[in-house]
Image 1 (tube, rainbow, N blue to C red):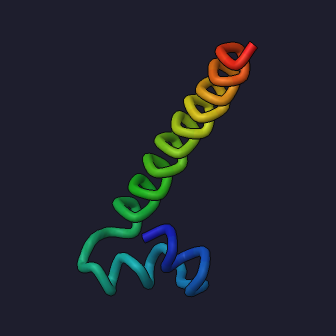
Image 2 (tube, rainbow, N blue to C red; image 1 turned 180 degrees about the horizontal axis):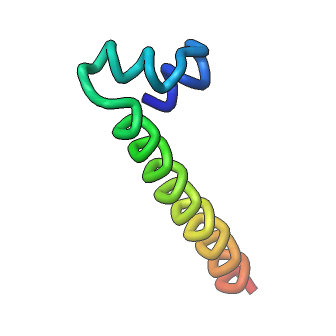
Length: 56
């Protein structure tokens, strides 16, 4: 859904119609994805710091 919006330029309503869901479902899905990616970014940054410490 997020790619359809970001790359395809489609609105939440358009994506919802295409996937046969309500536009609010599209919004919630995009929000959940952003939250998950935020967690992954934090984890990757911490992992990088741990690796640097272990190299010492």
